[in-house]
Image 1 (cartoon, rainbow, N blue to C red):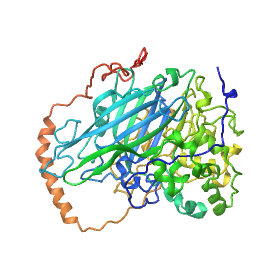
Image 2: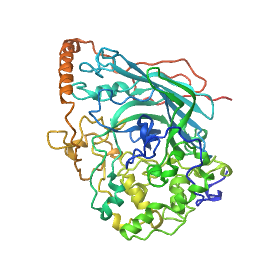
Image 3: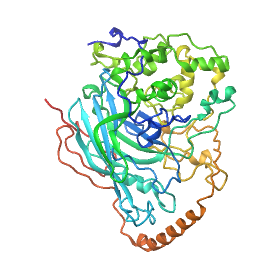
Image 4: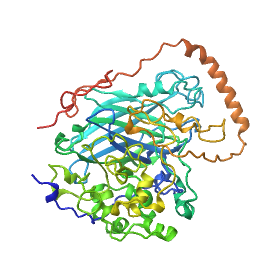
Length: 575
């Protein structure tokens, strides 16, 4: 059996991406935003991967959680259509457990919409919504979840499950937690699944693009994503469902990335339709790679590429070995850029952390080469978010992850509370080489935690916002102590820094008359629904789903037991 000490790792073989078929749309250039990182995807937010999280479930030993977020900058008041998942796209979580940069496990979601408005109304709902099947909810979505293991055909895990709707407001949805609970489903085999809207868990000050926070770190402390929501897909599965050989003890490291796909040709207008094959339009592994590592001319190519081609593109080798950000930091803040080539960054982004690069981390932490059954001759450097499932849950997590002495944090996976902006700036400035934080950047962007506290149970995310921060009485953010919630496990306790309110943009009032008329119409419709809503028979707490046994997945159905763990493998494999 090969060990990591006997395996060869070309840590400086640093390439982010190979050329692949570019997305056929040519939209306007992206604005300065972490979530709209490439020109093409900036015009297609429904399939724009904003963030990927992968972490061992803190409240459920032996399970791993993946969270895929799309559609950046969802304003809580973004009606009347709000924010549906795309129905002509596929959303994927890909897992590489043997290090060959190809997906060994793929989870795939497709969505459908039931729009009951027709020519009758423009409203998303025409009265209070108290259940997912409430007649007042006029726009409903559902999804199909499929899985493929080891290159086998996709098999259904759930043929149809409900999506939690966009949170219109407290008048329309007086108990949104109930709607989320109904959309959170547990399957036989231990899987837990959720799709719907949530508070955007990413926290940062986007003024990093103004010459790195104004050139003197004066432009910091404002959480640019406070009050915004995202569309979330969350999945929790047992380790053995993603580990190489179904054995997480021998093979604890997995690499993860997300992709979204669109039809190659899309037809819009009265007779909408699609034709041709699908193409990949978005890709995301480690945070901030396509934003601050990949240059503008290669960003669309990165989104259209696959990890197995990453090691073959000489045009991008220098973007890891000769990164741009340290040079900018040196020019603006007179902090010397570390010597190149950057073997430490190659490990963070392309191979996983090992002892090979000679850095301060004296552990073979999260390279697939640490798996006992990985063939080192098939290993390929590639951009993935790598996670060691065997790393113990940290009792007192550091927001700086590995750089803060917390080996369970980023870049060993990514937890919701990991401050990936400060971690990345420190790493780029040389902290990953020396093992010491760069004092001049010690305060980072002064946004040290999310504006909303996270839950201690799946899907862990905060509920969607109903207002953005502003003056008191107009969506003002609650005090940090009130936002943390109670009963949170230590692993996900938010480490919130100073909250700084966002400046609201003043809008022209040209449509005030039409808005007033809309409110009158809504008021009449709401009043008409009040009696029906008050006397309606409560819907079941959660839908029940069943389907026939599959060759890969076996039998799965909704169960009422949220702690169910399978006594044996929930799926069978071909001989």
